Amino acid sequence: VSNQQDQIIAITVAGGVGRRMASETPKQFLPLDGKPLLMHSLEVFDRHPAIGAQCVVLDPAYHAMIHTEAPWTSLSKPLILTEPGTERADSVRSGLRAVRDQAAIVLIHDAARPLLTSAMIDSTLAHAREGRGAIVARPVAETVKRADAGQRIAETVDRRDLWIAETPQTFPFELIWRAHERAESQGLALTDDAQAVEALGESVALCPAESPNPKITVAQDLGVVEALLRSRGEGAVAR
Ligand code: C5P
Image (cartoon, rainbow, N blue to C red; front, top):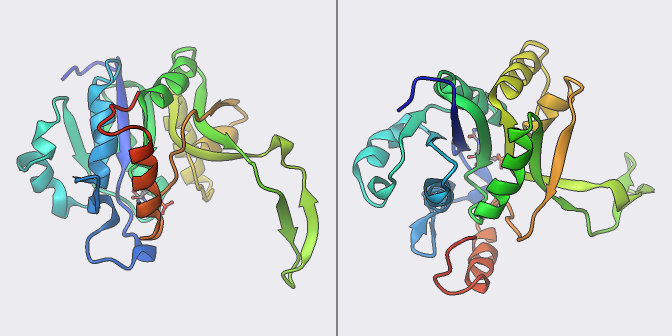
């Protein structure tokens, strides 16, 4: 492992407790196509030639298992494990601290989005190599309404400029570090990482997702994702 800040490092946040899942097994370990949900993303990062190491933000109760048991031990790149925080943004900051002395560029990814592809990595990475942030995103296809206090329609929002933010969200390390530090000191509540960079006034590119990668939130989402996975082709390697 290099100690210089020259690596491209993937940080996967898997520290959520999944309260909406109503399941004994934490969401990140539920089986999807015969593998724990979390493993799907880790394998894509492991196979991608540009990525030098990865960091997983996960409850310390699982760290020993990841280091010693199958299927995790099949991962070939250096794996840094660190503990989560209260909110997603705290977990991301924990990951950033853990890779601080090694990372030139970081890709921040939700473990709850297992349909990661190497095309998503490439599209965001191209911007980060030029010094900008970039996120995978999806144009809004539905008609969007804003509600009033009485749950009646206040207005129809013009959807032409609206995008759904997904992950990976990829940044030069120095930029996302500075952005998250400032967001924390200002008490800014974040639901993604780009928002911290936006607050600095820096522009962040939107990279249209070429294939769906929905976030698994409730147990029923697993079936949908499994169907999407199978539709990509039996045993197909994510591009
Ligand atoms: O809760 P939400 O669906 O937004 O979580 C998105 C991702 O962030 C999940 O992969 C979850 O494990 C992670 N997370 C985390 N630490 C938290 C909350 C969420 O790593 N405190």
